[in-house]
Amino acid sequence: MSSKSFKDLKREVHDKGICQECGGCVSFCSSAEFNVIGFEKSYSPPVYINEENCLECGICYYLCPQTHILDEDLNKIYNCVESDTQHIGHYKDIYSCQTNDIEFLDCGTDGGIVNTLLSHLIEIKFIDGAIVSQTDAPFSREAKFIEKKEELIESSGLQLDVSSQLEEIQKFSTYTHSIQQLNHYKFKKLGIVGTPCQIYTIRCMQNLGVTPSENIGICLGLFCYENFLFDKSEASKFQKDFNVRLENVEKVNIKQDLVLACHNEDFGKKRLHIPFNHLDKYMRKACKACSDFSNIYADISFGGLGSLDKFTTIITRTELGDRVFKDFLNSQKINCRHLEKSEKNRIRDLITQYSQKKIKRKNQFMKKVN
Image 1 (cartoon, helix red, strand yellow):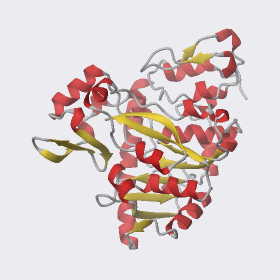
Image 2 (cartoon, one colour; image 1 turned 135 degrees about the horizontal axis):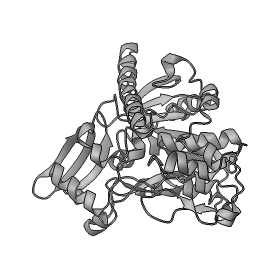
Image 3 (cartoon, helix red, strand yellow; image 1 turned 90 degrees about the horizontal axis):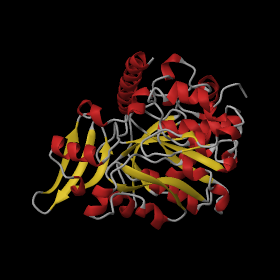
Image 4 (cartoon, helix red, strand yellow; image 1 turned 45 degrees about the horizontal axis):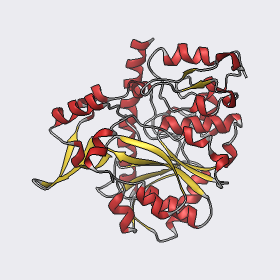
């Protein structure tokens, strides 16, 4: 591999404060059974636990979404080598769709397409299950294995009581901690739903042939401009800054800004729109070091940007993603708007605009960090 080790990862990523805390280095460590590295504190990067057992193989360094060692390889594999594809990535087609399943539409974000697709893929036995993010409070998610429609519905929306919501405002916990548990489950082929940094780590794992990459059947990527880090103090500040109580938040969504769907007995339902530039102090520092908005290495990318309310924007990217989505369209489980070329170009240009903003933000931030 290389002479790189966890020490280099710590110096180049962790010490600069740009660790995504995705858990990839911990989950796929060649010496994981010897407990070499792990998380000791919340909101903090992994640390050496038993340094003497480290093989210094470099796997942790190569998998990290902040080292970019495998960028050239991945760009070739996923056709992101032309200058005009660097912002939005290579893609086959663009769609704007809505699920025909009322339950998924009511409990999910945008058009409910991701959950409907996962349910479809499980139903036709293309995958045996999936790792998704279960929402347990505003801005708080935990990885969960699912294999039934009912579990997908449970994983969507907010379903905790008031006290639990305010107790559990916390950082985003990614799927990678869960992937190393695959051998304990009956899944042979798994669908993965993740943000750009998560999908990047998975693609690096597949590129290097790291187990259990053979278990991953498809990567579904989410648009991501930024994620947020809340402890109780930050949650209190957020509520004061934007005059909102987090226990009243039913859905969190991202369009051209952050959208909170709120409800209580006094004012009924309302939607609160918060511009991204008002959220800087709540953003995870590591997100400022990320340049991928539209999830360019996914098989299919999904997000609300560019589509009407209650519709999802879909970008098919790989041959696999294109084939799977076209089969999904024929299932009659979703409703797709007819998009003229000009409308597809409008959506593409809007996504490109946000991608460029994220790239510019990263470049400015990294100048300060380095």
